[in-house]
Length: 280
Image (cartoon, rainbow, N blue to C red; front, top):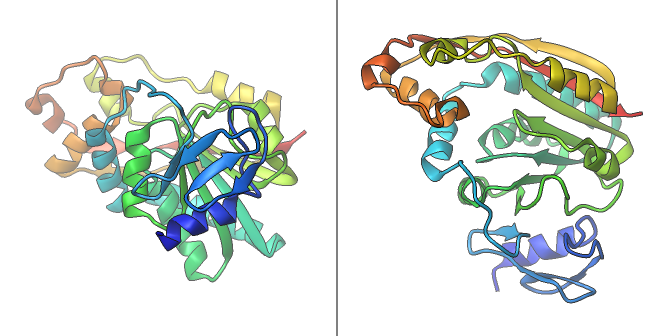
């Protein structure tokens, strides 16, 4: 029996609940099995698929590969620094943290952020969940110290008040679920695009300027804002990175650009807003 798989099952039955009936999981060797006998296998690459049927998604392996390569080469370095500071501050308040990244994609940004905490010997129990199996497969193959889950972001497989910190980066949010799974003193850290995020790509595609007003307003309605941080960065791009920015962005879906068009994009703006809040 794979020792890591056994550890995944044993360590997480106290935090996770069945996504079908919301009941507790029992401790089985290589599966999550709830008291109503709903069963979920641990996949070969040590992730848990909590869907019983396939889910269609625009996201694919090439997108995650491009995104992961960009992040490993510092694309979101400014954002990572902000997230690390926020998580370090939380770890000063508590002896250990349970951190859940909702909409984690390929897991690279989350894993890079956690690395600083683990180097500093902080006690962290980390989970990443995404609806897209291809992203979780990539994460589980490359970053082994987190429990990776394929699951419904609007129906989280976590018990009430079980999570210290929620990360939600450039991904949809279900705030009722945020509030359900957060501990009373827990926080949500949501990263959203600023109005000039990837503006060079938007210009190439003749897209209208982005507005984050609705996303910000919804956060303020649902959560008690305790901090808002502006992240501003601009990167010079190699030809390879230009193609990767194009590949990773949903802006590219349904649009056609020639290689010559993409090569015109010498720099890219990575301007973001980080919203930190707790339950009202």
